[in-house]
Image (tube, rainbow, N blue to C red; front, side):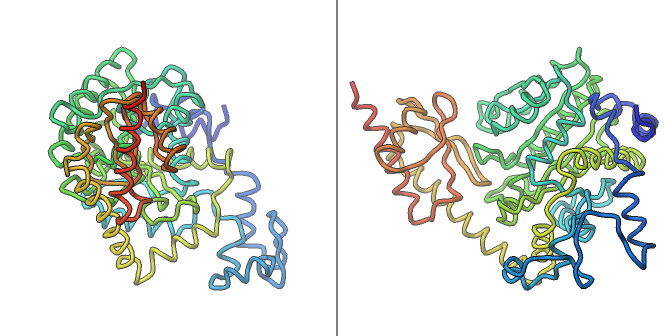
Length: 433
């Protein structure tokens, strides 16, 4: 094993042996090289005043070389903020701005220890880093039965972990904390589990309320107290899009230093929050466990980044930083939030009209981009295909009964027609012999 990796492992083990035991084989072996091209280039940047011939970029007249056909469309930005490689951990100014944003929007994080956010190539990349560092063949990854299918690819296919499901909703139509608790306690013999919490939930658009949040935290603590090492990931992809009286903070803050056997990791990003899907700017943040452990986990994260994408795209980081520091940022976000909330409210008004009651019921939703119908009389995939082929309407079929509808991409004045067409599709299928 490389001495740098060994040193990081010793730091983590001394700081919290439970966190050390959570690491996968890859997680234990990975490190960020201190001696190599990047470190020598960094040293040269500060000392090579005559000629700096260290890194694979091109300069012209003292500035990053570029094509005018590209720069003319980006003339508001300096070439130095676009063309050179961004640091593997991301632009420092962006990391600081995102940290400040997290504190403003999550008061429960105030005064608690957590790492500086590390820039990822959006949310999926952040989750894959978690999988690489902590998921081993046969490890259990606990997610609700209504989940984003990419978890299976990221943790299951890539890392050969086993997916464990529990029902998202209980009989009261609220979050099933008892189901989560039991799924965790079932891993007592293994002694380890990875728990992914995704609120607002994809595909249902559900976020728990404050009391449900406390129940979730209690379930996780019960698992840790039972001797199970828990890597708990808050997938906050749709953070901030809370339209009703639900939690308006990430559970990450409540999980920091909850128990020595619990490692909270926050994965979030500008993707949905700032409506910049194609920019691919996300963040990964580690909570609690002492400065030494946090620093070592950051170094291992940088090792994964260096070994996979080297560093994230510089221009999109610059664009997001510009937005976060603009005096117009909050007002413009509120404007878009109002539009999204209006669409969600319109969906509920239409669905609560009663005219579709024979065809479906809908799962509780209060946030995010999506909602799900539970079909009563037809198969979801058959309906999906029929809607697409006969009415030009696209939806997502999930299992036999569930149909996901993304109201995020439907103008408010088209929502009623959308559900009328879905209903018509159900009626068409019911008439078939």
